[in-house]
Amino acid sequence: MDTTRAVPPPRYRSRFLPWAEEPAGGSRRGWSPAALIRRAPAVVTYLVMCVILFVPTARRVPGNVSIDTERLDRFLYHIPDLSQDFPLALRSLLTGPFLNHNLVQLIYVALLLGMFAVPFEAHEGARQTTLIFFATSFAAALFAGTSLHLIYPEVLDNAFLEKAWERTWSGGSAGCFGLMGAMAARARTPWPLLGLFAAWEVTVVVAYLREYTPAFHLTALLTGFALARWVVRPRQRVAEGR
Image (tube, rainbow, N blue to C red; front, side, top):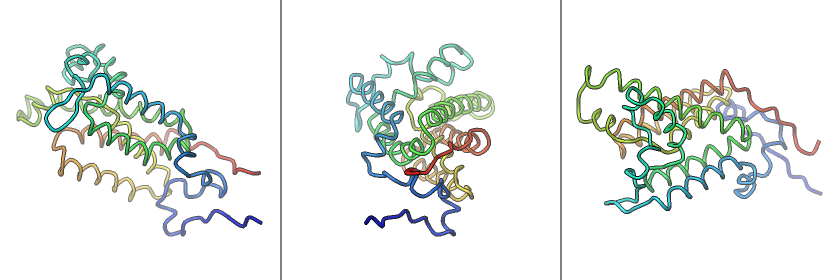
């Protein structure tokens, strides 16, 4: 006789966890890596596409492996294009999320997808996952780009902002932060998890990136939170085996 049963987390913790109040025996079953992959086809498809696009365009650079930005320039997001060539900017917002600019970013995106996007799709489905991923990617690019237009170079003119203005932006990390914000929104008390994710970004920036990246990631995080909290309703699940 199988006496296995789902054990919910303690009540004092469940209020801070996403999907903690779903019916036992529903989405809590089948959480092995293989089961998660089967239940997250959109995430798996996106990651496979990223790898397929990365490998033939990659070349060695000092300390890393990077895509050929000159060859792919018209598919990458340039912040100046918002004011100089808006149709090109819009096109780059569609293609950029699939083009991670170096191997470090590709690995980082893969880790974020595994930790956050796969569980989100397992609970919410491919449609909502895809919607939030791309909507937050677009919102982050538009907000970060517009903000830089407003402050550089008239208000502030320094090497940090100049680099953000001149470089290209691409990859899936902003969309991943959007899904992280959406995951936090699924907790009954979301603020600790949302704060943890924001602190995660700040730590990575201070320890490694030191670039304009938080303008993208934190915008995506808050946009994903707002969408999942007040716009996109949780998918109704039915306990398995009924």
